[in-house]
Image (tube, rainbow, N blue to C red):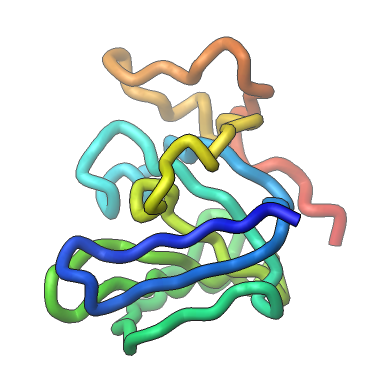
Length: 138
């Protein structure tokens, strides 16, 4: 099992886990670009049961292009995006990789919404690229 941990900028929210990511990738959708303040958001998903979160996040809900409800959880003090939950991914938390204590834990395998990537932030050629959200199998 892989151990990982992370925290927000002020340290008010922290997490730790012991599981391999179910997936890891860069999302170029408009919502993720805006939430990250950059050209994409680096994300990885782990089972909720293998994740321990300390501190209380604040959240807001969006309806994704797929129709799924996505709740973005962030630190109410420093504003750092921490993780998302998504009704199309039950039982998973999708963690923002920039919050990792050891950023090298994150190994992106896919780029999603690659068709929306900005000219100055193109998907890495080593990732499998999807023009939109790939099928979840569920």
